[in-house]
Amino acid sequence: MVLVDFGLAGNRLLDSLPRQERAHLLTGCEAVDLVFGEVLAEPGGRISHVYFPLNSFISQIANLSDGDRLEVAMVGSEGMFGMPLILGVEESPLHALVQGAGPALRIPAAVFGRHLARSPALQTLLKRYFYVLMHQLSRMAVCTHFHQVEARLARWLLMTQDRAHSDQLHLTHEFLAMMLGVRRAGITLAAKALQKRRLIRYHRGDITVLDRAGLIEASCGCYASDRRIYRQVIIEGEAP
Amino acid sequence: MVLVDFGLAGNRLLDSLPRQERAHLLTGCEAVDLVFGEVLAEPGGRISHVYFPLNSFISQIANLSDGDRLEVAMVGSEGMFGMPLILGVEESPLHALVQGAGPALRIPAAVFGRHLARSPALQTLLKRYFYVLMHQLSRMAVCTHFHQVEARLARWLLMTQDRAHSDQLHLTHEFLAMMLGVRRAGITLAAKALQKRRLIRYHRGDITVLDRAGLIEASCGCYASDRRIYRQVIIEGEAP
DNA sequence: GGCGATATGTATCCTACCGTACAGACGGGG
DNA sequence: CCCCGTCTGTACGGTAGGATACATATCGCC
Image 1 (cartoon, protein in one colour):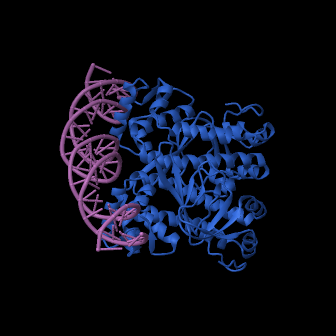
Image 2 (cartoon, helix red, strand yellow):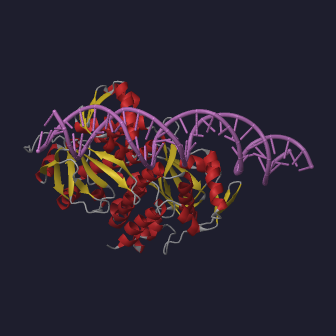
Image 3 (cartoon, helix red, strand yellow):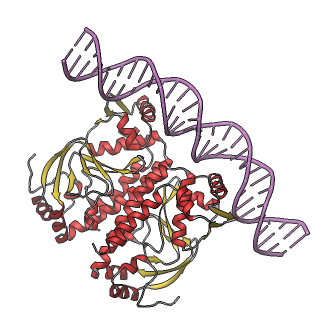
């Protein structure tokens, strides 16, 4: 991948920065390819780099000591991994797993810290993004509790599709079950239902989104809600 | 209530500040009595004041448009209400409801902003507290999904007891049902079970915690986990 | 001391999902 | 082309909790 020092970077946050600030931050960045299954942080572990995914994406998973786990946040080209650094904490509270392989930009934590300290625009932007994350986290708590597997699966597929920038996803039922905190068999049922409604098609780990609008219809309102908040705070909030 | 400009304020965050900084911040504060049921913020509404509860406490509730709601965070004398201001956002993502009446200190959002800008110690402390909140929010998502009503109720009572600084709580089953996102009858069953185990006693809205250790035993690990994180980050992290 | 409001106990049927188990289907490597 | 690992379909009993309904208990008030 070639790094272009002017123009857009392909990450929504970076691209929201004033051109000069973006260019400056990019000088500290390194292009990497994230590979599926790579662990970027363990809960309680140190955050060594900040990542700005381009076509890749990262799942953030909360692990309970008894083995219960649940994906609570997803980071793609709309976001950034390493938010605790904004708070002056170098530790990740969550498990961070590369879930969609692809390119990303990364920058060492210390370098990032220096950029952050000197760029009010970056501070403002990332604080806004933090607000969005808070919003999404609390919504996730409610959604996971009240909504049914089929709707949650639909939501999850939409979120993933957005971040993968592709209609083709590579995910087994087993994996989806882990993300949503349900049985594998539960995913099979829900996925079959979505397939029967011709919203998706899948075959041994390859899922194709056929009808995006229909999938939104089948999902709980949480998908639309998350997007609305992001839009309001990050995009429309750019120049308030 | 008399405001003492030196010595401890009775709020864990304020009391973690260097003496001078605390005294300075307190000059902008006003002592108020929060009354049960008072709404300090609506989702999407403006945050007019920052609150530091003393013996009072505040529930933060996520509301979905379809009526589903769930308490996702609780603020007592260990915390502060108005965190989005740290992020430069003057809007509350959650419904904030006074759930335990009692004294609190409050400070207008604008005044708070000025103090914050001038006090690195305050910034550091509140950013750490933010980290704790993030941690607790993600834990809440997992807990709510996986753990049973009885354990969640036990956890909730413990959290409330800590913040009320009292063994006597005033809560109806109806109210608890709303907080935990379950039916009122579900709370009746769980509460009866806890009472039969002699961990609590209750009577028409008055709940007494009889056996704190037993209640911890009956709760899911999430109670202990939340406290551990708070201790690590806020208390031990004071002078890292 | 009776009345109405509020709080709690209990019952019934219902649904979504769990735990487990196993069988079939597919695909890649030998 | 066959075998084995992986992925998916399906089944079965079990359970937590939902929706609804109604009965009972207790308090404060008149």
